[in-house]
Image (cartoon, rainbow, N blue to C red; front, top):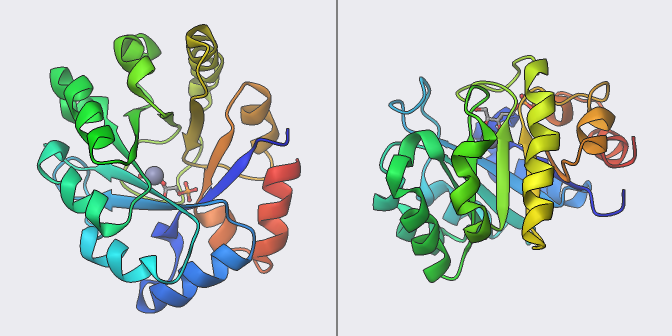
Length: 218
Ligand code: DX5
Ligand code: ZN
């Protein structure tokens, strides 16, 4: 699968040297830099906001993939767009009936957009917005922390999401996030995921470049 892209999540990096970590992962084969933004309300953890993204922007020319795990994301999308994010994804669970408008607002800022659904949210919930998305992100863990185990029951949703994307005839990425390892990566790619987020699998590895290569090739 040549169109597979690897998106290491800097959530698993050492935050005390986040600039260097971003630069090194970029030179070690990352296609996207996955940025997990958490507000302590939508999820039980707090990470970082647009200021940090702006500051690390100069350490990498890769696609910055900002995954917003925050309530009322529409209040902040302008600031994330200004920070240098290339794509901003927002949760169905955080947006409810404002999802379509939020996706459109992101696009109007000249940034790509995507919808995210939690492991227990059905693919049909985002059916009406799929045409507005550049990316659909399926969570394979409940958001909040890196290093959790992949939830197997998400597997059928990958095929379902792939079918929905194919039915649009549009070039929409299907991203999977949470618990991806060298053992399960081939399965998720086989089912249709083409953007693979990996936090611990990449950052805890001895040889990060080798692991990124394997995630792409396995
Ligand atoms: C979870 C985050 C993920 C996480 C992935 O809330 O959205 O991006 O960092 O980390 P791993 O690959 O370690 O599960
Ligand atoms: Zn994420």
